[in-house]
Amino acid sequence: MIKKILFKTFYFISPVILILSLLLTNPDQYSDPLIMMTMMMGALGYTWISLQFVLSARPKFIEIPFGMDKIYRFHGIMAVVAILFAIVHAIVNEQVIGESIITTIGTLALILFVLISLLTMLSMTPSFILKYRPFKWLKKTIESWKKFTYEQLRFIHNFTIVAFVVLNIHVLLTPSARNSIFITVLYIVYFVVSISFYLYHKFIKPVHLKNNKYLVTDVIKENDAVWSIKMQSTKKQLKKHIPGQFAFFSFKNEKNKILEHPFSISSSPDDDLSITVKELGDFTKTIGQIKVNDPVFVEGPFGVFSYIAHPEELETVFIVGGIGITPIMSMLKYMSKHDPNRKVLLIWGMNTMADQVAKEMFKEIAAKMKNLTIIPVISKDNTYDGEKGYINQKMIQKLVDKVQINQSVAGYYICGPSILMNLCIDALSAMGIRKKRVHFEKFAL
Ligand SMILES: Cc1cc2nc3c(=O)[nH]c(=O)nc-3n(C[C@H](O)[C@H](O)[C@H](O)COP(=O)(O)OP(=O)(O)OC[C@H]3O[C@@H](n4cnc5c(N)ncnc54)[C@H](O)[C@@H]3O)c2cc1C
Image 1 (spheres, rainbow, N blue to C red):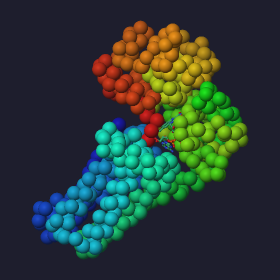
Image 2: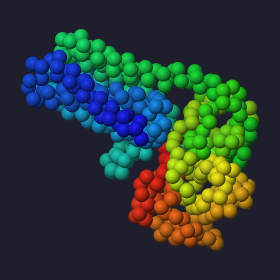
Image 3: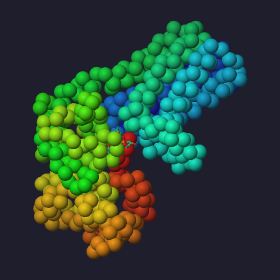
Image 4: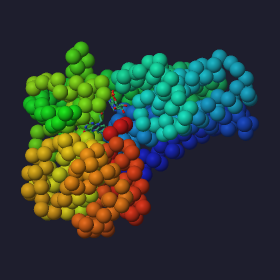
């Protein structure tokens, strides 16, 4: 909690350091309120753009208190906020001061940031802007011209570093920097810190990753589209995870290129590492081709989606859609050994019963946990003799009442497609469940 407050405070007041320094070193230049206002906009934009490189490097000191998905969401929102401040700064500046080589360089950096961020929001993340028609149309138009793979999008996203270098040339050429060695040094410090995080993330971390080499020990076909991959460490053991966490797994593809993807760890921390993967896109469609003894590089663990992180909760309700079961598999396996008497309700949405994975494992867990109730909810098989349709508020309330979950001590864990997650978060809120008792993991960063 303290770490969260400290980080948020630092993040939001960080531009003040630059604003005050600019004001104190150039009092005459900023006596005009309009020029002062545009400088403040620029400083807000500059500082928060610089901090984007710290956030996206996934440093542990930020990831541990917040969780990776929240960090990436915040990274996305703050990129937009910072760019908006920079746009206002650029427009007002050009009106007040006029065009010059300095403003042209600033505008160039801004255009690069806008283009890259737009492409990211349209094609790389499940962004809120896709709710709006013009953006939907733009996404379609771009995709009809070229359908980028996730790896290509990530490569293009790296060009933000070029935009950042151009932005720093812009700020270093401004009169405030040229007239004050202190301001020049301050900009250089911001630049060096941000670039260091970027370089560490892109070049040094992958070298360290080689120490986290695992070898595949088993490849199991769970059903038509889902595979489990078991692996064992060859060198350094991954830092012990808590059940429910995820990691980045890098496999070599057929072209010997290493591709990194996030997957929840589906094994218990007591067992060998394993993941359970659904065939979905370019990489996961090839997951069944992985062979025993293939190398896997693992970075992690990450995330805070775990009942272990909430010892105040005494009962647990899992609400899951499809492959969203993977972090729950890890938690249930761990619970069956360390807390077998816990009251647990698992509501598991699937198209048909054929989508169920790890049947044997669930049988073993059910035999050990007498207070575990598993309710499959089947949406695409009318002949199914049980809960049918899609999970909704009425159904959750009915099942929670039936199992006699004590709302005041229960934690709720949701994982699955965005549509199910949003619906369940709203449903639990309407049922009066406090926000801090509702936890969710999005399978998108
Ligand atoms: C925290 C987390 C845990 C996950 N756990 C599981 C799991 O246990 N089992 C499972 O089957 N899937 C899981 N996923 C989803 C899985 O990472 C994607 O399905 C997979 O990366 C898709 O890759 P692709 O090349 O096959 O698909 P593509 O068609 O290339 O991509 C489809 C979508 O997957 C996402 N994606 C692709 N590559 C990456 C990447 N390197 N980093 C982040 N997102 C990416 C993007 O949102 C993209 O739009 C998890 C995702 C996250 C973020």
